[in-house]
Image (cartoon, rainbow, N blue to C red; front, side, top):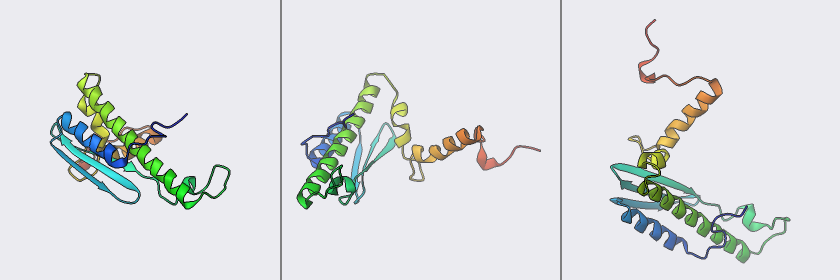
Length: 157
């Protein structure tokens, strides 16, 4: 199966700008963007919530860019072109995901909370997804639901 936008020529900055304008069109009241070598971050505010998407970015030195599937070394120019293509593809996919979520909400297919719950930023700076994933893993592995009010400790003796 091929990846969405695997051959896109849309520059990263255009995809990022498109995300920002889409968010504005759907009512976002704030927008932020940041990056590091291995990830980019899009954060916005809408409907009284702060939402954060972290986009993992492939490293330039990744073997997928430096070598062919048969193990032959690629030239530095070829490796750079492949890395740039992977960057463009990742940003197109993020743009599509955000648009699809917003349109699903707009069309009444889902609620805002349903579409963006995992990406909602909590007061401590983590996202709801980061907070709940360990609890879900624990519930599945133990077969037990977490206590309703764990901060209060066990119930009466």
